[in-house]
Image 1 (cartoon, rainbow, N blue to C red):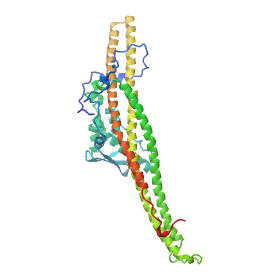
Image 2 (cartoon, rainbow, N blue to C red; image 1 turned 90 degrees about the vertical axis):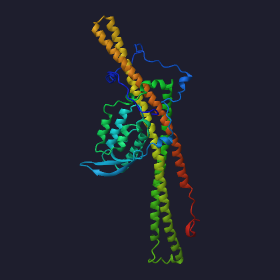
Image 3 (cartoon, helix red, strand yellow; image 1 turned 180 degrees about the vertical axis):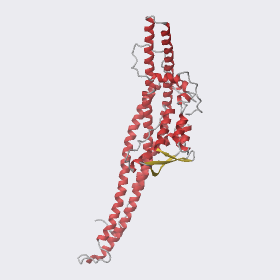
Image 4 (cartoon, rainbow, N blue to C red; image 1 turned 120 degrees about the vertical axis):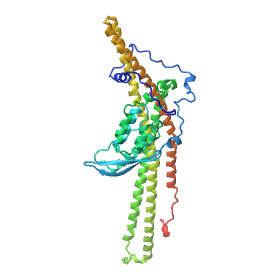
Length: 439
């Protein structure tokens, strides 16, 4: 991420097949099962706890630099009718690439799958759900906003922003972007296979990486829960502001109708009311003026609600999307490479026991040689799994740093919310018009 371009590593013969073989289902290893001589945890010492200067593990990015990488807009294009269904299309424009392309939801899906294929150990934000039959405008607008958050998080992510598939997605204007994305991913391994530091990732990790991982995971889980509650509360406040704006507008319109109930200029007043005929004219004039004031209040409340929806709720949603992608990454680490490593160890222990049994029973040399060959292959698998496990932790360490780079964004968001609320409440009340006041 902070280093230069990634150079491909030569792949060991049969490594891909060996990794696939390690995916076979197996039970957890027994406590007394023999295991290969994998690297032992390094002893804790002050030198290893402090990451040395110039370590590629460290990110040297600020929030301003991160946000300045790109600003991508996603807007709805008027629906086009197909043979059976209407198709929603999006206009996607990138400030960085100075491009404007049209994409459909399925294009985002293929792009998302390609990212997961190439960067399985990075935070790939989730996509919003696919539209179901009968989806309304509210759903379509919510999905547009979610797609915008997704593509901006991706466009600003350090490794993603330098990959060819991002430029392809944001700038290719040909007829079939999905095939282009799939072609770009063919015959190309994931980040582990192409990163020149992958085989040495362990050397850059602090000795207490497992402890740090557990602590960071719990911390970010707590941050997510807290900001999820804040987002929900902000959504309710914005919703009330928008509803209030609608009520103010309707109140003003209904107020405008009251003078009609008091009689028109051509309709004479009843004799009982004609004693103070001047009062009726003043009252009607005051009510008309108040209806205009309520319309202005409605417009101001609507603007405030819209501004808070964009500057507060949407940005909190973006931050929550980032945190959710971190949580998903932690789960992929545990259920993916870590679990595969354990299965590979278990398979190796089974082979060793078979070897011990075959030697004790004095089987034919050929069968023993075949078993020895399989054991050597499995040792290669375990070595690869161990390297992948450390590279996954290496990436997790960097992704954790990236989350912390985004953290100051929350103070900007909440500060904007406070300022908006202050602006909405500091307008001084106007005196009653025409001397009409409540007694």
